Amino acid sequence: MKNIQGVYKVAGLTRVNDIYYRLALEAPELARLVKPGQFIHIKVSAGLEPLFRRPFSVYRAVGGKVEIFFEPVGKGSRLLAGCKKGDLLDVLGPLGRPFSLPSRDVRQVVFIAGGVGVAPFMLFSDQIVKHKAAKVLLYGGRSKAHTFPLNEFKKNAVKAFVATDDGSAGVPGRVSELFGRIDIAPTTFIYACGPRPMLAAVAAFAREKGLKGEASMEEVMACGLGACLGCSIPTSQGYQTVCHDGPVFDLQDLVFP
Ligand SMILES: Cc1cc2nc3c(=O)[nH]c(=O)nc-3n(C[C@H](O)[C@H](O)[C@H](O)COP(=O)(O)OP(=O)(O)OC[C@H]3O[C@@H](n4cnc5c(N)ncnc54)[C@H](O)[C@@H]3O)c2cc1C
Ligand code: FES
Image (cartoon, rainbow, N blue to C red):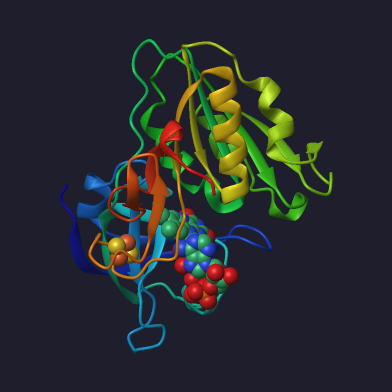
């Protein structure tokens, strides 16, 4: 799979709400190459601190720009949130195994996302807008403030259902409260991305109902290229790296110790 290292200009930084940001890079080649579920590995500062790049899913790739959607949680992502238009960022990507596109016989595409796990599904829904399947997004957040504005998904004919831990938006509880929206049929395909306990619940549900699907895993990364083995996770195929063998894995291959 082709990936490139480049230094790209920040085309803009937008504050989506109190929690989330969007950052766009002028990166025509990346925008052309990237597939849904792949990530870019960003050197967030020119100095040695933080030393390692930080991985972010590609949220959108239009007009020669690549966008990420992120929550500042630590030093690296806070530095990104302080970027200005015209700043330069050193980026490696696109990296990792993407989601597979739904085959023609799929009748329901189900995106299941927790928090920033929604990021790869924007690009994905952009790319399958012409697919005839019904598309639903089951979205779980901590509170209303963590609920990403879902209008852009509506434009791609994705019907969104929301659950929040504190009940301040949508159905109270975990995203699993929304599993009733899933057609239990061989023509349904699940794509999931979010915190590990959520993915464990999705994998257990899929196994119980005999549904097919894929999930994107998160792990702290160093090289991002499959060389240091620092992001290895157990799977039914043995230990595999999230950065190179993943981040997307078949749901049935995931092992949750
Ligand atoms: C394939 C992939 C795609 C990702 N896509 C997105 C995205 O689209 N938007 C987004 O906001 N975040 C995304 N992340 C998570 C993002 O990489 C981390 O939030 C970021 O690296 C944290 O760096 P930091 O320096 O800000 O925080 P640090 O100071 O390094 O850590 C702060 C906290 O975040 C945790 N953390 C650090 N790295 C990760 C990680 N890789 N996964 C989970 N927790 C982590 C740490 O354990 C700690 O609790 C993705 C991660 C992976 C592996
Ligand atoms: S981060 Fe080095 S192998 Fe994945």
